[in-house]
Amino acid sequence: MLTDLLASLETLSTNPWFYLAIAAMAAFDSVVPVLPGETTVILGGIAAGQGHLSLTLVVLAGALGAAMGDNLAFTLGQQSSGWLNRTLLKSDKNQQRLTWATDQLRTRGATLLLTARFVPGGRTAVTVSAGITEQPRARFVLFDGLACLLWALYAGVLGYVFGERFKDNHSKAFLLAFVAALSVTAVIEAGRWMRHRGQHEEQIL
Image (tube, rainbow, N blue to C red):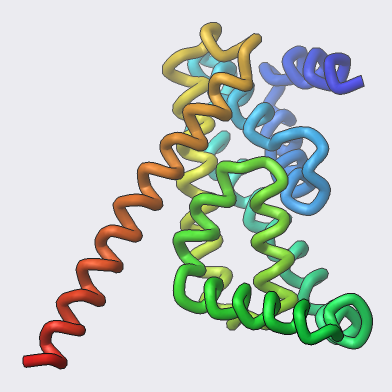
């Protein structure tokens, strides 16, 4: 079924309507991670490299769709937080886990959103968790929008530059995306650690 869907998407990728398909698949993948949205963006990048589509519009369609899906996932988590706290999360152990998740999202929200965006399924878990733990919507929209833009830019450029090399080997593209996300995360975490270390040293002095 997925093979047939991919074949259909590949056939449609030279059509201007494919921008809508990119946005729709990216949004759907953010909520129900069945088919990685990277696939559609990569196909759009390949079509752009062949002169059929605009790379800029491919990236914007992917980023917009992903952001819409992520915000829907956030809203679903937010709307279900009360019910979850009264049922599945009411035990002391689960409440401790929820507190830990809340602290992690509050202190590392930007990093988590960026890393998870490159992991099919992981992005859904983080965005829903952000809603459940009632993170500030404005802060979520800002950092998630940046993560979605970087994700779409990466996938689009990957298809545009490497074209046929990743056309039939999307797993390699996903692996490179994950490694890239981890590298960016490591840089962000290192910078955050150095900043906190500097603040700590100033307090001691």
